Amino acid sequence: MENDDLVHAKDGGIERLLHIMRRLRDPLTGCPWDIKQTFASIAPYTIEEAYEVADAIERGDMAELKGELGDLLLQTVYHTAIGEEDGLFTFHSVADAISDKMVARHPHVFGDQSRNKSLEQQTVDWEAIKAAERAVSNQTRALDGVALGLPALTRAVKLQKRAARVGFDWPKIEQVLDKVREEILELTEAKNPKHQYEEFGDLMFVMANLARHMNIDPEQSLHDAGKKFTRRFNEVERKLNKRNTTPSYSNLLEMDALWDEVKKEEK
Image (cartoon, rainbow, N blue to C red; front, side, top):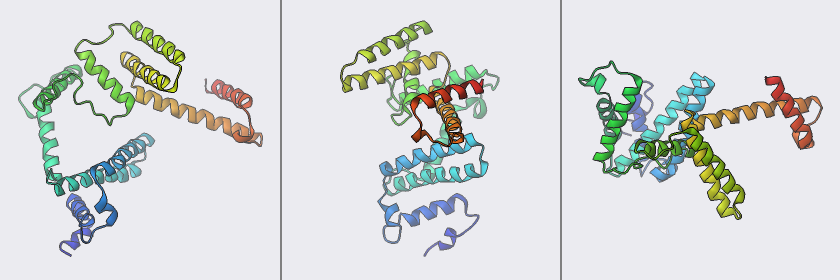
């Protein structure tokens, strides 16, 4: 097989990986599963690998991070292989495109603008450049370009930030809190599952807006709340085990009392 030595080259780098993907996708000699994949079928794996990278970083596991970054890189190689087969783009054209974007978005590094800017001014300049890019790509409406595939809370905040830039925002946090109370009331008054579903979404959306006004990342805040719940429930379970029982054989009254005990111990 042509360039078969490259498949086994230990220092082959990105060209080795690109070649391996071409072999996997070869219609005559490749892997049947890999050949069948499409942009859409691979997308969930791409998202999963990105989360696994973040997980390794949070756990401080650098050996694991190396492997997870490789898995994420494989996703880029996969998508660009499909793009090349369809005549859309290649790995190298994708790399060139992001390189061009980084150069254009950093005129204070690669151009003639001063580097002596505050972080706030750099953010303003960055957003102005991105807005100009959206205009060129016919994304002229305020909310154009906010990715549908983002985590829901993150996307809600991005939508609200875009709306705020054009003046559609409450000036005071008290007004946001009033809206939270209004949405809670509407949820409690909802009479059927469809209405409850809609009102719950409205409440979550305004809660994301409250987080934005409080300079809180709602995605991270909820993530940390989940970690706290896990830590506390694990401790409840440990205490039950000391009583020679488990949650399955306990009851809400006993576990709730242990939960309060754990909370007090944490203070």
